[in-house]
Image (cartoon, rainbow, N blue to C red; front, side):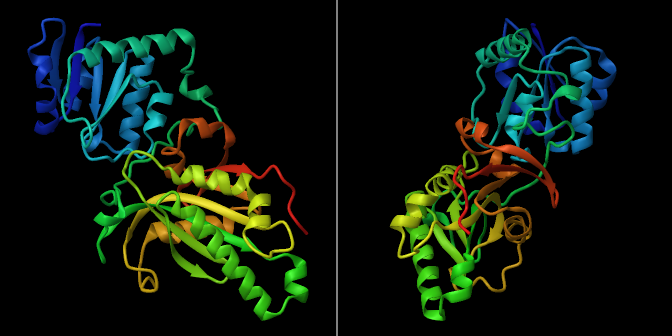
Length: 337
């Protein structure tokens, strides 16, 4: 396909595609959305999502699929939360202008080839049949603006607002602890669990940020590209027996809950977080307390879209919760009584 159309009303986006104007291989056109809808052009279409609401984007994608035309997404401001969902629905390319600084004409050829290769292999079913447990269902593409990525701790400043990965952890005391253990023993268990989580989080540049008896929130810098804290969550769930034996004098196999989310919050040092108001901090606590079962790890859709693809087969969709899709992994080991 030699016709390339960029649908945008953003001069910055149009300028990014400037090399295509000089191409002898492709015929490149910039259109507004109204012009594109009335054109009937047969082309590889790049959509600029910065001026689209979710329903409008879904409508444009359905129209392209009905016409069997290849398409790609241009995301100038990082508003698409789940990049993978775009490819699951049939995109041939995804351009994030926060990271893609230059455009090479050869990219179009690869994008067209990718689109047609996946269509031939049957990897991209029609929207009405897209029921993969690891793929957001049609109409669930979420557009949301996050605060700037925190990237690393040396870039995080007091009272600044950033996006982070949040890991909720909650130790579930056994019936024996509740019935027989005194306050001193309970404090020992709480401290041992806190320290075990803190040591393991440190390997992933995570810091215990909030802690109250049996429950804590671990904060990880987020670079806007990937969520390595997902590996830690999986390890904590799979190594629950080992942590029980090595983390302290627990005298039983621990039961605990884990939940992971990516979102935004004002940052303050530990101990000064009591007055922070954050929808995402509230959400991760709600996900952990209300949705997550014992000995399982839940991911929000934001976290699921950023973990390694190698981990996706471990998780299964568990429906919507407070405006987010959720995914669950269950411990292979039985819980303690």
